[in-house]
Amino acid sequence: MYDVHTDAKVLWEYHHLHQPLKKADAILGFGSHDLHVAERAAELYLAGYGKYIIFTGGLGRITKNIWRKPEAMEFAEVAVKRGVPREKIFTESASTNTGENIRHTKLLLKQKQLSFSDYLVVDKPFKERRIYATLKKQWSDLDFRVTSPQNTYEEYYRYYQQSEQLHVEDFLNILVGDLQRINLYGRNGFQIPQEIPSDVWAAYRRLVDAGFDKQLIPE
Image 1 (cartoon, rainbow, N blue to C red):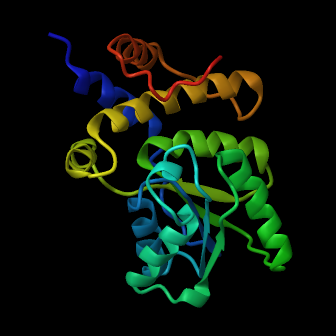
Image 2 (cartoon, rainbow, N blue to C red; image 1 turned 45 degrees about the horizontal axis):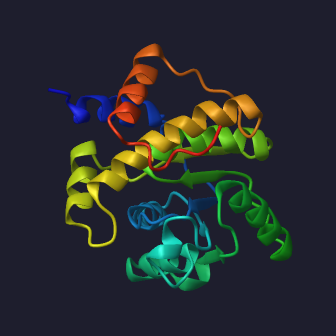
């Protein structure tokens, strides 16, 4: 019998970069449906890893169906509840995808006359590699390291099992969809190319064949 989890864990591990933490001027949190990202950004701020937090995100393809407030606003509320001073948080809430996140964040920094020398970038565990490759292409002079919520695959799976808004199938579909984007966007120049080992690509193909194709985009 086909074991979905074996292949899903292959993708999960590939998406991680395991970059060591380093203190930075600012923490840049990319918005999504995943509030763990906001919690991780707040945790890093409170531990002294950044002097400010920037949250970027409006309502994307998933959050437009589950939230009324933009992702950045939802994330900011989580961080404030965790103890981050509101005046240390900047938000950008117009973007609807990763490319717009980057463009609108650059505009926010210009409008606020903010200049930070380096960043800790926080995103979902299964988007570490994609956000790294995208920033390297679209914000090439940015000095940054990438991190994510420090949860295991099993913890995330249980989280989606208990979620009232999204489900386990959504989690697995997103894992697969982000792998496709790493491959596709590396080819079309949206991000720097990433090598995808043959075992990772084989796991991806088996998951697609098993029906986890709901987050794929036309190629």
